[in-house]
Image 1 (cartoon, rainbow, N blue to C red):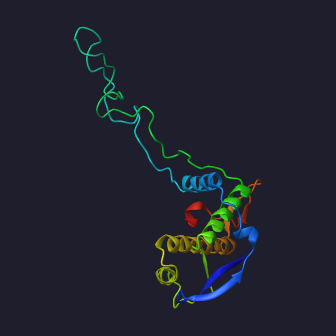
Image 2 (image 1 turned 135 degrees about the vertical axis):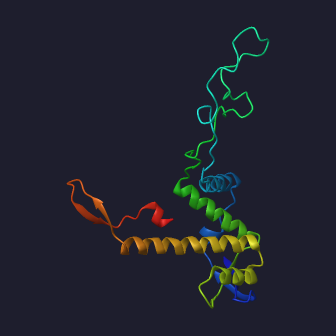
Image 3 (image 1 turned 30 degrees about the horizontal axis):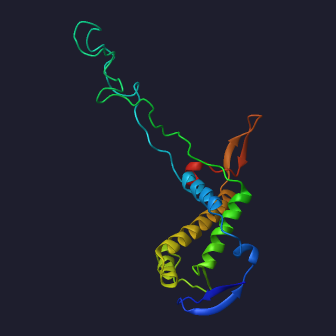
Length: 199
C-alpha cells in the first residue's frame, strides 16, 4: 500500500510505499477505546484533596444534649451531615488513576488508529520540513500550514516535545552523576536523577 506524500508547503508530492501490517489493520473499537481510556487515565495527576471529619476545623464538643431538646441528636459539628462538615469519603492527592495496558495491546491499538486514519485519508507524510529556529511556535505554525487540523497539529507537537524531553533527560542523567550511599556506607556516584530534577 502507499501513503500520501506532501511537501513543506502542504502541496501533493506523490506517494510512498508503506507496510500493510502497520497501515492495513482492521479497526477494533473496543481495543482503541481501552487504549485511549488508559492513556487519558494515566495523564491524570490525582491532585484533588478534600477534607474529612478529622481535617475540618470544628469543635469536638457535643452541640446540645442528647435528649429533651426536640431536635435531631448530634455529636459534633464536623459531621458530614452538617454544613461545613467533613466529607464522608474525601478525595485524596495520593489517589491512583493509572491503568495498565499490555504492550501488544498498546501497539495493536496504535496500529488500528493509524490504519483507520489512512482509510479516511487523514494521514499524510511530510517529505521535508526545515525550521528557522528550534521553537515550538515555529513548528506549530509549520504543521498548521501543512495539516490544517489543529488537533492533529497539537498531537504532533506534543509527540515531538516528548521525544525531545526524553532525549534531554537521557543525556542529562548520563552527564550529571549524583552522590548516593552504598550498602557499606561509602559515597559512590550514581547516574540516577531525582524526580524533581527531571520535572
